[in-house]
Image 1: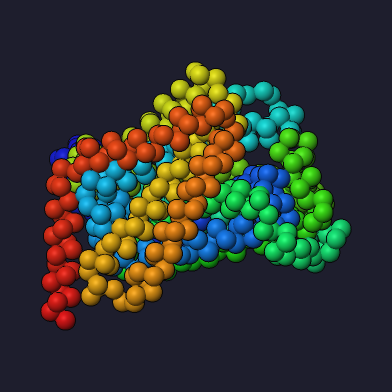
Image 2: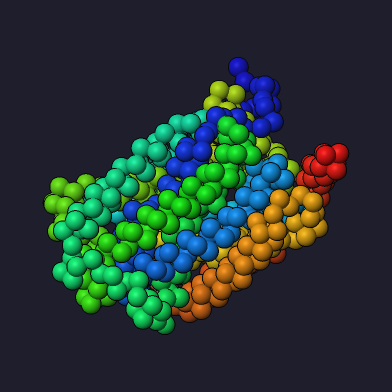
Length: 487
């Protein structure tokens, strides 16, 4: 009997599913790993950034991403391929830059996935050690997680969405319990209104705070990658995008402010720096002090499930990127096969699992530290890639509506706000590059090499291009324009 993904088996040209706004938003928010960001990025933003003013850095990052989302959503009805960034760039700027963007996406999402496996392996190893267990190498836990992720990614997307939904609800719930406990009881200096005082947040460190806030949003834009599996793509994708940005932005800003309240505005920078040096854990200590030891212990476990949800989300994203590229002939054709039973990109998912396994093995052979080097280096590559892709996509939106003004519903959503977003993202790119050694935690030489990887991927993709030269996208767009002209 033929294997379900072999040419002898009946196949569909497209993935299928019935994902609603909530399901897609859950998967996207899970990719951002909100609890992990509060535990990791927040102390960095406070300790190395603008101290008590760090919550405003997260608020500004949220506004920047909302500006990006306006143009992204406005262009969504005219992008029929489930390829997220690269499909938008292809429609707006042509197939060469589109394919370059696709390569950047593959590199960025594969990198952050590998980095999270390192972080998760370290976190489980540390938890086992904390409870008196044996010394087990971090890679053992990373590979175990990889196997589970691979099994879930192989099956229908509905299963992954349910797992991610449960994990996400639990981590948000435990953080909100802590948030409420802190706000009800107040910190040593009250509710710390200083965080929103311009004299406090408008310091030289605000750029660093915005930088670490932006890295906490990696993956939020992947709503469009689930286009073929969405219930009503033209409505579901825009709603999920706005919902994801709003929830993540409010959650981050509130939770970082709560950390300031818990420590006290005048003392929070020192507490955050102690966390960075390993003598304290700002998030877990806050949970224990204000919500009890049980909540602290639960949160420590949910930090690991947060990482698992995050890596599962990125696995699904990369598998679908490969699937989309294979459909247009830019990756091996077998990767575009759809599993008959699970209606998933099963072979692409399997290839992604093997790729991640090889990368983890390489890190082990080299002897990299799982947290400082594996996660730090890979997060650096992903951050550069994310900002590049968002900038290219927003430029594509502006160019698309300039060339096709009759498709623009509003000059604000089609031109003005996207132009503002281009400027904001350009500033974000400068912040990332000028503080890049903070992101990677590595030397200047290592950071330069890592920073060059996404631009190199962009050039490589532009050289390879797509086999159909973008003709499929051109035909789809011509049909949209023809329908519009008849109206």
